[in-house]
Image 1 (cartoon, rainbow, N blue to C red):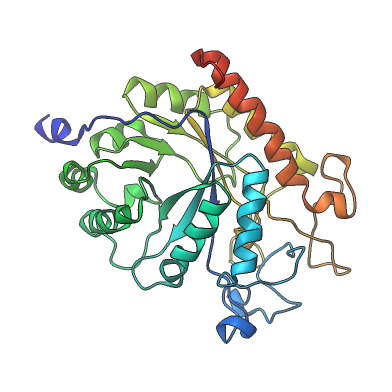
Image 2 (cartoon, rainbow, N blue to C red):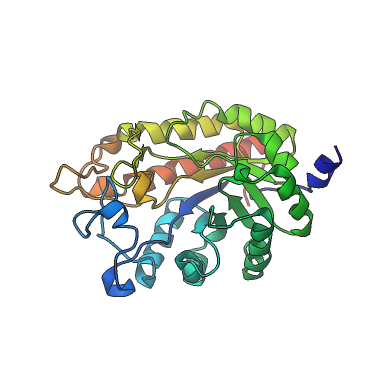
Length: 323
């Protein structure tokens, strides 16, 4: 019981009906980075053969390209997103080195930046605490810990009291673990098999424990060209995305997290994609009955649709008065 008491920290209020999206700054191209990075995962040979079931509408890009980053941030802002949750793999990683440019572009687009702390080599609760201590000097206050349960709750509880003025979200469906570890909230990330039916229970349990609830929605899943995982979650011409959003609306979620803006390897991206005349690649064609160029941005457009409905519903539920 003493350990549990140590773990419980005051919960900061969530931003009103926040919509966040997971973002990956790990792509490279020969022109800018001296070689391909991530597009060539699993032995693929870009530019025509890439580690994704989909192909970017603007072609392969570098996450070091300022023009690309600015376009991506504008995409997200125009889609009703307010927080970009940046995948981060430790000090000195390409994602770390690119973070200042991402933050600058996000700020110009009116987006808040949060950090998705990934399972980098040697990660411990103490190392994450040190990461947060440094990253918060950049003004970052929200941290999402992927695979939080890989580390014992007691380890998290020990370091949590030293982290003041930040929110920590655990990727878990177990509110009890998050509470014991001193986290402020929970999120789910995975959209490969979840139906969203469990969102209501998760948020009920989180709220009963005094935690924030930020379940994750996504368009589908297909990692078959990048990993040995051959499980496929069909996009269903947009139906999968709509269904998960509807479950969020029924869950009383404090925030929505979207998986993802550009995780092309797992086919969860909503960044614009285009059709290629080759059987290896899919496109967004026929999503919500759209075709051609209109279909390329279909998931961004649909995100704006759902973000507006979500915020309006939460405002009504909580009695917010529009400013």
